[in-house]
Image (cartoon, rainbow, N blue to C red; front, side, top):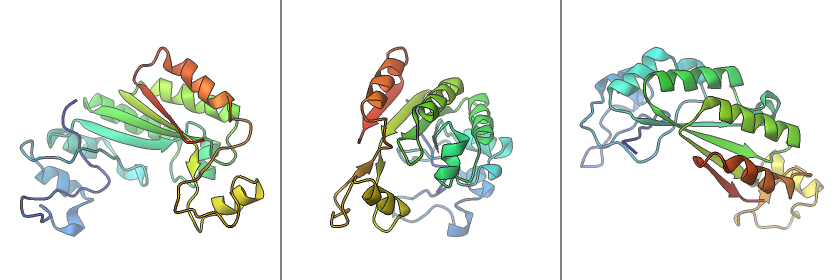
Amino acid sequence: MGRPCVGRVLKRWNKKGKPLLPKKEWRSRVSWSHLGPNLNFTKRATTLFKYPKKVDRELVGLMANAGCEQVSMGFESGSDRILKNLNKKFTLKEVRQISEMLSDHGLRRMGFLLLGSPGETRESVEESLVFADFLKLDILKITSGVRIYPHTSLVTRAIDEGVISSHDDLLLPRFYLAKGLEAWLPETLKKWAVARPHWRAQDYS
């Protein structure tokens, strides 16, 4: 598969467990200009979708020149409405632009969809699948169901909808899936995956 890289935390360790670069440089372009093809990269890849406006062709070029071969894209949804519900600070247009830049530089792209969050509908799921298909990713990982973490707004919603009770121990994983998707979503993903062997779905509903 080649050697992946990390684009959110630009942190590399030497044999003594010390960072190769000063902490202030982890997220900078200077970090990538210092990295060379002989360094051992970690096994996972993440791109900077929290601040997509900072991702441009110059940065992607530095990543490629440093030996990066794969980048993960956690865009979560192909619906701008759902992205807004999830409080994501980027748009589908920005996702497309970054995806194209990575592809143009020969970097493999692994995308992530998170389906079933509050407000999700069959229509928004279809939007996400069409969008992900349009990107022509090398790998797509799809998760059905959103984990309910303590002290989040999702807890209140899940209690109101009877998904959990106020006494449930949320240190044990519990998941939320928008109503109306329970039986439809797994079957829909199976149908889409038939002609797309690079799509991998996990169901936590």
